[in-house]
Length: 221
Image (tube, rainbow, N blue to C red; front, side):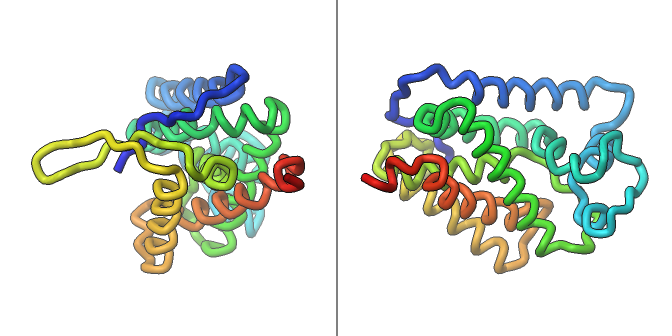
């Protein structure tokens, strides 16, 4: 089930969302074509729970202060499919959240969700030396906000059938609710498989809450 686009027009040009996407893409291709390996950057600039809980840098050493790896990790990806999936979700749902929050508030919201996602992941993986990378924690917050603000917006989604694929418009609360359920089931089943499901859950929950903080007029209505 792959969302492709939504029927939810915006009033403003989502240039912050575009900037986020461009930064993620540029960083990824820099990692690919630089003299160092992709693994080097993942371990030196990814958010490693053990390093952050013990405040001790493991090799390869980070080129930024350890706390800042929570930020650098948000713009790094472990592979092309990882990048492509995250950027697709960010483009579909991020433009509407930027539209309703405004550009500056959207930046604060995005990084706030990313920080909450990192904290959620670290709390459940205190001694893990596996780096967490990717924008999915912050994007999960965007998904949570979208489900609150636009639950009935139609999201055109690619669905697999036995012998063909079909694009079907589905209400956002079904698509995003199903996505969140998968994260919960995967986390409780312990099927990490290299995916930080707790980061997704924490980011999503943060987005659900932050949207009322950053968009209080909707709450009053």
